[in-house]
Length: 309
Image 1 (cartoon, rainbow, N blue to C red):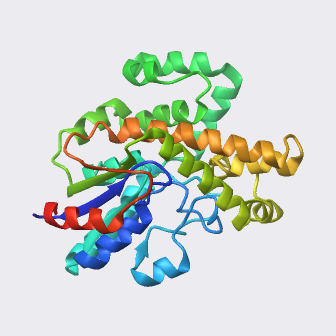
Image 2 (cartoon, rainbow, N blue to C red):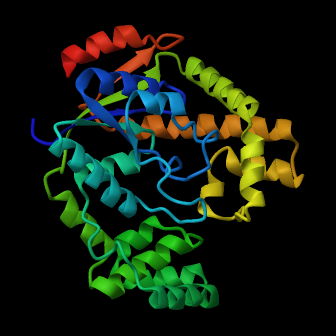
């Protein structure tokens, strides 16, 4: 199969990292992370990044590729991750794409063309942001509605970043985001993927595992990790610090909630996120689902997957 890649995805705490490593070792592959938060340096515990020992077993790519204060985008991910995948394929290696960020995975596999929207115009963006502050979100949405009603209908007036970006792209390229998306969706996918989705047969087992994972993160020093980032001068308002685990830890460190309340909120928000992940990955009708019973059985799963792959 040309441009063959393996995808291991699913909700948080389902064993994606462990299974991905074993598949890479057996199939002669390397790991390409597909996690929107694991791209940030020094954000290791709260993102459940592969450990040094795990990375020593098989090469990992797309981890620690930017600083926490940067606004990392899906377009940048596709550009950088596709270069990694192409390099692996050229060397006869199989990219094993592992992660839970569905948008990153789908965009990478499709090879969505972000040409013309990858780089913006700082002056134009600042002017549009000033317009947003002066006129308000509803007025800016009305402007957007005049040339891209479909995108405007999907956006909330408070979503400043996406409203401004949609208007910026149109003014830079003469094409709407809606038109860009239609053109790229009509193209054949860049990679031919065999997709594995991990979950649990009983949703209660998944949620219990998520709760344990959060407790382990706290024991491993999650609050210390967040405190160190704040001491670096990282703003609590930046994109990276809005991640589940970091936002709640910041609230605890600032004293607005207790640490126990923060842990409970992280667990709740992680469970809610897992539910959204299941919905996203459930749209792929060609994926091979593995639903664990109580605990993952990697040996059994690997035997089944080797035949399927």
